[in-house]
Image (tube, rainbow, N blue to C red; front, side, top):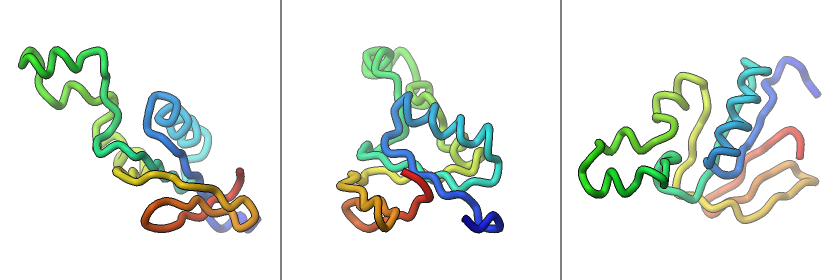
Length: 106
């Protein structure tokens, strides 16, 4: 692998496991390209406090586990509303509804 090029990581899913995986990659690799793809249309939120939001007890922004600024600050690309459809391991590509993304390892 060419060490001058950034490692490319793709995390499928933006739940707790996905956020933890991306954060751990960033902790150990400050230069890596990290893309998180999720079928959800919003960043991960806490379902436990959803009733509090719906009843008006808390504000919308307190629902989210990580803000959009978190992803930006940690140099993570977040692709919302896209469903991962498959992996082409031989070509090292993740296939999703509107395109493909390259990655380094599977």
